[in-house]
Length: 437
Ligand code: GLY
Image (cartoon, rainbow, N blue to C red; front, side, top):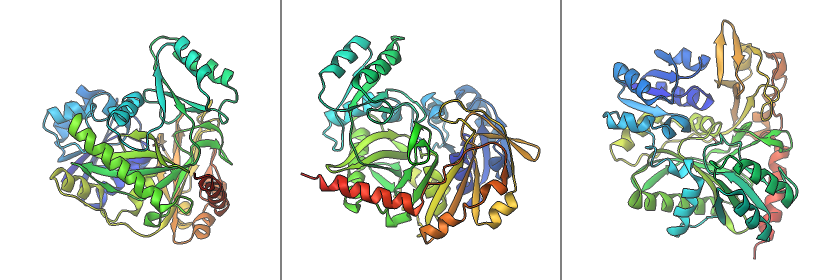
């Protein structure tokens, strides 16, 4: 068996590891020389992963049995479409199916027209004057969300990223000034977020354990939004601060959405990600991603005994595959360039891999390039470290003294998945749930 994987980040390193675990030969098309993928793949082709014709030419030469696409951008650029049209077995949605991610306005409208629960009041605007008039009229705190892809960094929330209504209007006007963009004004909902991922073929979803991504750049959940600074997963035990009943309802919402979408729009195939928030009024859907999350993919794929290859092969045959999971807690912390989230300043890292692994940490390489014995950062996330165990304190203890093993200029949030952070979230959710009508 041979698989082709498109993408070169931390999520793709995790997908690659899951593919090779099944004994499958791996080829990769990536924009960067990811050291982790370079080690496990038989072939790595560096180039523009969004260029469908070029990807097709390479795929035709490589003759893979299955194709996996990690990031959203190649799907949005039609790479899955051109591969599907040419007879490849692709475990990723078509660009039409990925509209659930690539147009937030489409997703909200579809949910509303088809009575899918968990929707949030949301109005799209292209005209800055209309957006301003609308914002002046509403009597709730709001969120501004670009309609298209933003790599998780585009959403701004009143009371978090901007304080006053006037400030929000300024941001909306500036965003819409070109006349080409579309922006959603959404009602702000309060609660703890969780990522619910799964694999889809037909109307059923094979769900994976929920994960929480720490999106903000700085410790204490402060600073700008990022693609994700790290994440925590408690396998099927579930996150200790999210009620199990809320997760069950979120699963129903996602399955209802996919079922109706398959019937009315197009068939959805491949990984899916529901970004939910647990509120006093049940789960609300913040966004759909037509892919696995980064870093969340590392949490769940590491817990899966079943390889993603077995999942894809079975599901593309129409079988319902339920991945077997280990009962472990895992925490991911990303090393990022200094200034990541605002003005990243890439530098060079030296990693003592052996000592990092002796400590019990796993390394996932992300948007970096191999440079001899060193790792050259880009402006994006560099390296993810994962600790796994049965007890949260034990899991966290492995992150001590990282700076003695990884030299260079980088930042890492030390509060991700700590007992203190989990307790704080539990207290916050208790207050939120007590406001239940
Ligand atoms: N970690 C958030 C995402 O992958 O969109």
